[in-house]
Image 1: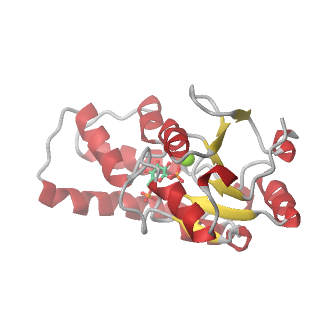
Image 2 (image 1 turned 60 degrees about the horizontal axis):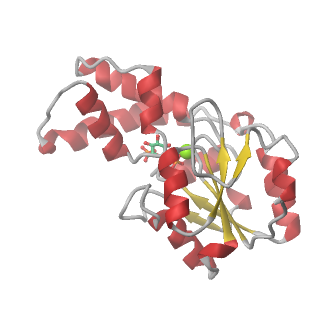
Length: 214
Ligand code: B16
Ligand code: MG
């Protein structure tokens, strides 16, 4: 199958870099302080999900209720711990084959867009030195509705002045795949270990030749 798309939209966490492990460590620290047992399996439920929604999932796993007035402060602690990890990131944390693929797309003249729920996306792209590949960045700071709402991807297409059906989204999380389909885009499922459904093509690693067919 060969598709020639105009826009290539990349999720960040789990597609370009593996920051899920840092989210896990920071959430686990907060969960422990709240007396909630939070496992690596539970962490799968947070992939692609906004910070606020992630915290609600953790609270419900622990059967805990916390006044809304305290939630922001607790999420700020989590983000500070997460950023301690992010600040030590460098170029070596880019997932296998990603940079070669971005180079390939640039040479083809494709439009490269970031579509991430993360409010830390720009900082992470700068730390790993991928930021210059991106023509447009849509992140958690400029969207109102988190994945699986299609807003993040539709905004990317609209900034680039292209139609949704001219875009393919690379996603590793079910919420993101659902968002991309709801946007009317093609989806490449970047499959690590968890089960995903609803994508059009599967990619295990960008090192394989699969992406070059797109
Ligand atoms: P932050 P993505 C998502 O990024 C992560 O997958 C998800 O685990 C995280 O909760 C969310 O970003 C918000 O991140 O706390 O940095 O704003 O996969 O959409 O690139
Ligand atoms: Mg992701």
